[in-house]
Length: 118
Image (cartoon, rainbow, N blue to C red):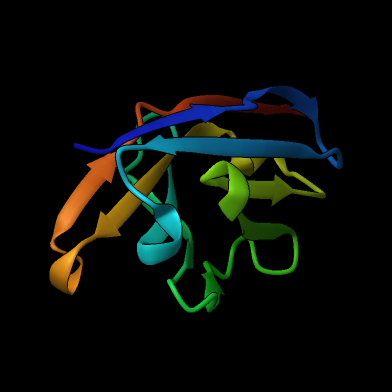
């Protein structure tokens, strides 16, 4: 069974930066498709970014050019570098992994709160 634990959330002023991490155990993330999602209060969960096992990255339009997803394979950790943050980036951020044959095994972290103030 895989376990994902996010860290790095907190409070930041608009225009600032924050780096989120997602430490994995029980799965090797470089063989998985890894995603970041977020959920703001009163809103549905929103996809933020993906990195595939071959290193291909993709981003939601709302974060493109500001956020960067990456993997530290030696640490089995997924990262999300958040720059030029906006108040609308305030949300609980969660990492997710899709692993195994046809990426059928799914794992979720519990999330970390990011609050951006103006």
